[in-house]
Image (cartoon, rainbow, N blue to C red; front, side, top):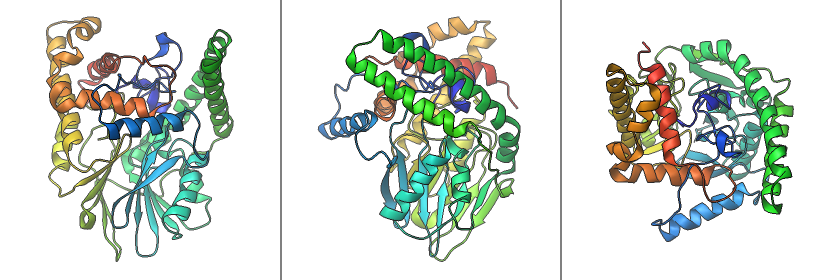
Length: 406
């Protein structure tokens, strides 16, 4: 989520990246799209279909606390043996997961923001899909909301291996500890801000603030003595998991959202799990490689697939969103590069590069889709979330900072 990317990178504030900078749904000054509490971006739903409105209302109801508390995901079937665990709105966000049910076991792609969330998905898989054990967990990249749940799989009872690229393991080892520490400190500040907000709020907003505080404090308590669980099987570019049901090809195609992103292809089911290198939220470029990212997606799109299981946002059954994201990153990078060559400071670029000036956002309703999706999939209060321009401004900042990354 370009969203204040720096936040997502380890969860919050202007510290990290998907680490997007997540937006908290707290005071206006802190609303940047994926603030840690993710004040979701959205607009009014004028023009949305009846089915879209119904879907969004259901998501809003879940974000308000309805539904079973232990069910953090909606499990959706993509193809025979392939499921998409769509993360429900949470104050401390979780990523989606791809679930591949093989002949004797299960492979799960990505492990969420905390062990309790991964444990919740394990329970849902057993109750809704299969009682086969999880044998492999794949970390698509090193960001907190995709790998901090790893310990839950190691503690589930069956033998489990965790797979990732060597680069992802390196980044987890070098950066995860400090980013977690910084995010927990930022969350403590967010709690104080929410308490101050609650003291001045009406009844409904007060309940919202109290719910946010409760979720943050629960996360802080769970992660206080957290021990990182590193991948046990690593590779540079490719690794294949063969099985009688179908094969899974783990492939690194170049730098994109991070330097170690892996794509998981299932050729027999025409499905691909993409992590955050391609998904339905604003791309997070905080740890990204904007000059190289579009080319990486071009390589990925040479494969034969129909179902796209992204790290955030809804499952896709075509390449439309993937193509739109690729084009957005390419167009934005070109505009920022031109501004830099012309000597424009960041603030001037952010004034000149607007949502309406970006053809990639206007084309095929991509910008509107991003707003609706992020609004539905994050916790929030009220009806006036920050405009998409705030996310774009964050992306401009991150592209400028990472423009010349090799």
